[in-house]
Image 1: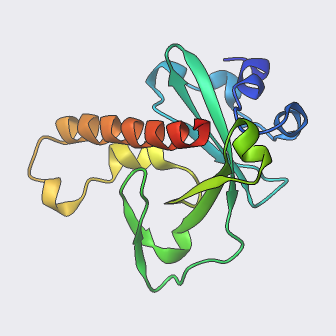
Image 2 (image 1 turned 60 degrees about the vertical axis):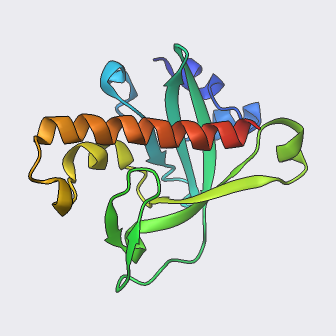
Length: 160
């Protein structure tokens, strides 16, 4: 995927906002065919993040904003995309402006997500204790499929 394709994929921000996004440094080396979702935080704008998924053969991206406040590290919190449990400071509330007129009117959707947006890797590697007796490859495939479905639901909510 090229930089231009990635920037054009964003459905809930202006062209100017998409053009000002800091893209991942290793964009050219990413294994697109095996990525369920690409997520990253913008190092120049710490509260900004991005998720990009393939839908119907084309990339669809959404711009996110992290909450300014953080949860306590002493609490365990679950990411609602990859469903991994982490300390509260490793999960953040992210909001996404809706696409089109709804977004221009200030409508947003939100969910709790891994603060580093590294859900794709966690879905494959962090197997919950109650699933560890099963085949790890099978569990990994199931968790990846579930992640893809939950991210699709979030994208659908942004597009509504």
